[in-house]
Length: 324
Image 1: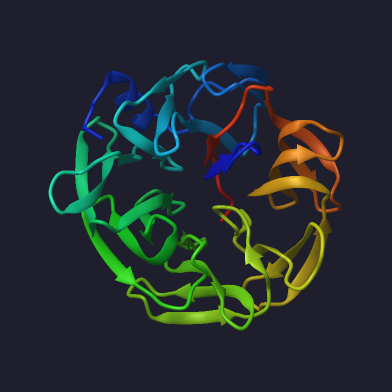
Image 2 (image 1 turned 90 degrees about the vertical axis):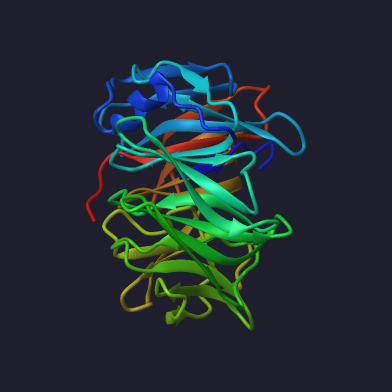
């Protein structure tokens, strides 16, 4: 799960650090109540024992066209740049790290998967100049989906990576929101993406690209994992409303469960747990950072603070456990 600072939204390298982190899930790393200063990102993490999410990596822009990617060390104290990569996405249960390289040899772009032994596997994704970005794992960490982008901005399909077999499958789809990206349903069987046709909603696809179901007029899917930890509810920015109104939908029935109002300029990270949501941005009291709110829109804690220097930063939050 990637979030971005409110101030703006490679070669194969196998190192001891990357090997160790890939083998150590977020749930198993040392974790105590503490503030972790991340000077490379100009961010302070406010972490507590028992948090359902943990920052395991981050990226930051170093120019208009390039980002640097950093991976968290096993001790949890520091982050080290992994040169040659623009995005890193550790799997929820550990054992694997997905890495998007700056460049790939030949006619195809690729993703690199590091396993628990530190072995790197480069897997083809799409033919250039198409790109496959925004990696998202299934909750069991066995499969990865990437969104196919045309011209660097328009989503036109998805690529499924089987991290166990090392195989990939690219699928083109039509009539989706070009700014949306694909994510897995909680059971890891299907893929969800935003649509923007005559209305704004969410479409669920089978892995071969056939439509399973469409939820019309429910709004814009929010967060890189818009599904609640239990898998029962789906989070959207409400359709045909003004202001920061968020809708919680019963994913099985498609019925509205609750509206949540939260003021302030923010991007949605998603669900913190089944009773709390997770946002980052400029908040009503003037602070900048990531906060947890309850379903009445009240801030219950601050998860990260941005310094005045922070900009173009994307924090990667990895789920430590799941109730789904």
